Image (tube, helix red, strand yellow):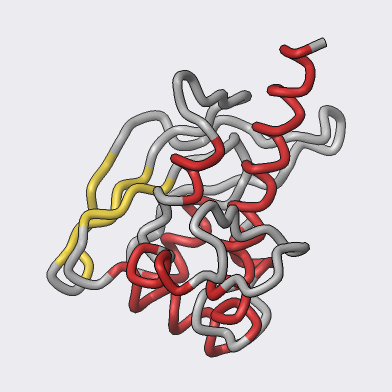
Length: 158
């Protein structure tokens, strides 16, 4: 859930700045907090939300259609959740270059093939996360996707 991953006002403000004058789409698993986050961004929106099911320990499908909302010169899309997500024909280096917040800093890393993972020395993206210029929750999601891609790659090679 985005709301629980933002730890500072600076992270929240960086997130809000990333939405200005752009088309952004909130996607993720059912119950991840997409509509809840949108309600925090646009307080008079009142998108319906539900608690996580205690019996199933997962989200309940509440958002049933794709919708776009105006936000400071841009649009934010709210989408129904999904139960699983998989990258097809997309590798870890493409993922490393696909995050908009990383884009202008990619050539500042010490190594050209930097994957921007926590154990990478000389990574500009890590420095920006540490300095709260890139929100932790965005970086954490990126690392999670990289780890999942590596695990699937490892299983394919076996």
